[in-house]
Length: 208
Ligand code: URA
Image (cartoon, rainbow, N blue to C red; front, side, top):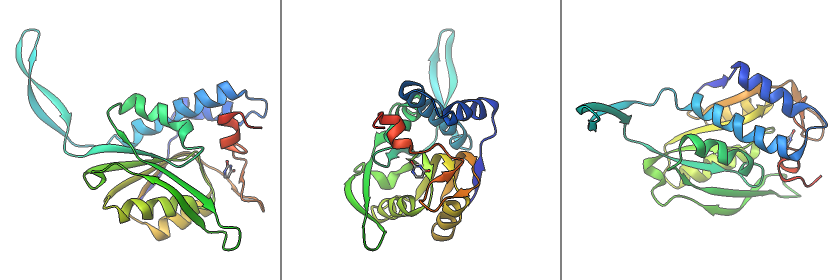
């Protein structure tokens, strides 16, 4: 498995705008989608193409199309919704598989409360989207849900990742590649990524 920190200038610029404490809901939401699109561009760079015949303006020519696997985008509720539009801008015909998890107060483990997956998920590449890879608990639980449904090709797209979360996901699911705009310093005692973005869900939905 690999972890890819996307160092493209546009990604770095946009992520820095998101880190400004006074960023508006509107800007944060738009930037989350834009960085989501840029991560999708990177996460789909190695897809295989196949030739096919098309009718061009000057007659029959060879065209190219992505071979085999189609996509399902998997936003983890609620913050993952904030990256969804950006991903769909690049893969507009993807099916959307929504996953929701809550944290059990006693065990502190994520527990699924919502799961509506594409019916043919075993034939699709899943692009999980969640702005923050913090402890890794939700990501691991989501990967397990997808694998239990037969999905064999999974990539995770996160705006910001903590080294602790990356290590946990890597240990549990070495076959899942992670694409992130930034690997930040560490988690604080409350499970927030430092420097991070703060509460990404609240900032996307304007609930704070
Ligand atoms: N979830 C967030 O929204 N922010 C963090 O820093 C960690 C988890």
